[in-house]
Length: 158
Image (cartoon, rainbow, N blue to C red):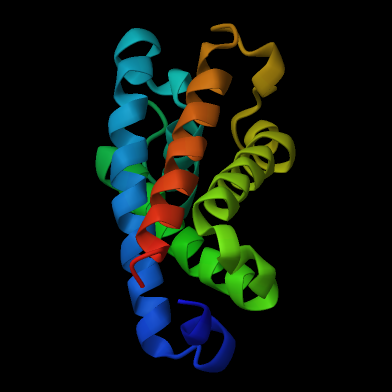
């Protein structure tokens, strides 16, 4: 694996990283379903963001639930996140010595990036002052940790 990233970061690596991101997003989605069932859309921070963005991008009614838009954006972000992880490994080649740990760290980075600069401006809700308590934030953290661990694990096979 080190050889691929150090000597030959080609289109195959980025295609495989896109697939790794999509698989990791699927796992993350499954993990987030219980929070959605308990709290509805607001219970899953990323899905709530994607609902708001879908209504704006596609000029849809805010009162309707837009499952296609939510999951389209969720999986686009996840796939691009996998490609971003490939870039991280190219930029920081020392991370290839422990790809799973690097993946988990990347998941934490994505979680922080989701919480601090993105969630409130999009949804109007401050995650650490969420009306539904800490569970949406914890669910998001667990989802991002799983995402990172899965991406890192899949990268050990590339």
